[in-house]
Image (cartoon, rainbow, N blue to C red):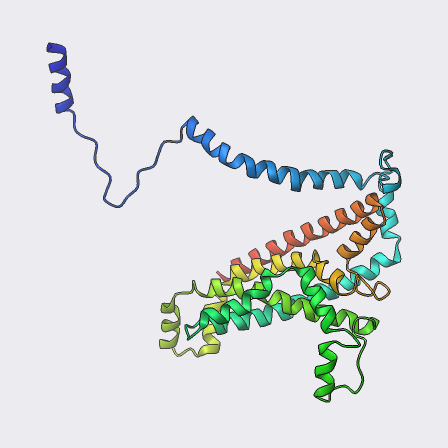
Length: 322
């Protein structure tokens, strides 16, 4: 009884721990049980990514150095850089590289400019803005291959709606074989890709514009800045990071976007609309997995080097503006 009384007396004499300030959350201790719980929740996603992303990447990387064809799938002798030499000695590879550069630049620049303009237009609140946003963002929810099929019908040389509109407005006199003419096929698929990809820039840039505080525009207005000066000195610097990342992501996606090309032309006519990735799929369909893996590894290395240099360049730009 005396011990219990002494303990109670010491507890009463000990100063109580200070209570956390109101509104401040206390940090929970990172215990082993908590770590195991977090690992259990992350495990399914980690296994999924390992099986469906990293294993095919490693398997394809190894297959690039072997003779790997559908005609002798069990015999895969090591050939070193033989598949890479075959790819680099193929004249069609260099024509696809040129097409890829045209495909990326011709699609990216109009997508960025039109998407930025749409985002600026949709930023202020106006009546039925949600309906306009839904209509603008709708193409992003549609499959790229399906978009290709739709535009193939629109650009059909005999009954396509594009020829019909151009003839009714007097721009052309006879129907044009858009997808059968080597000079017209690439502009046609780039036009379809521009329409499809504008939505991505509009979504991302609009989200960034909505984070710009109105106080900055009010301060710029008080300093006598018009809309153009406020755009270049307030809007663009504030969302510069978002712009850099969206351009990087979209560049990589356009580079790896053969869906629309297969839906519209299948790489024709005469390979004039083949880009590197669509050409890689065609090699896979021919059963030469080793050569296709070598081409895929080249694409991976090119995009990785581009991403590193692009991020370094944009980081230097940010430091220079500080």
